[in-house]
Image 1: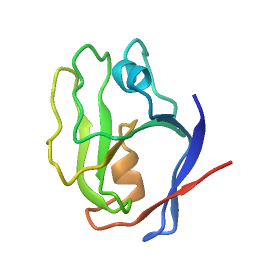
Image 2: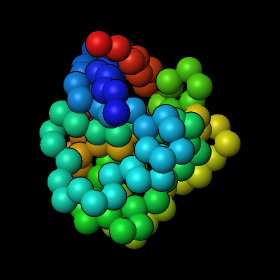
Image 3: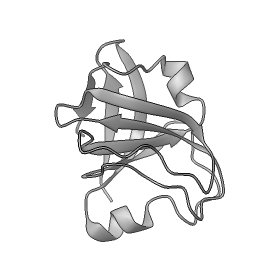
Image 4: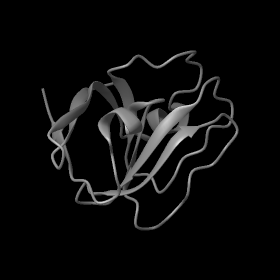
Length: 118
């Protein structure tokens, strides 16, 4: 699976340098299932996606919903296992990150993200 770096252009901070891109049906279906931990700089960018669930997950995650222009629509810090994020047709993709990432990066709705391809 290819990886990208995601930056918060609004706050000039790096969100993650090892964000895997889940842009196939199989990759979106599997997501983070089976993992026991998510490293600090790692994450999963799911596209397209209008929301996520944590059914079967073994740990909590931070979730960021983005529109087509990579603007943050909503955030869910510390989404626990067996939960569902909000779902909306406005969301075009979702980023799953280690817990604490939203707070550390001060990520807010309205922030502009950018993708840095290797």
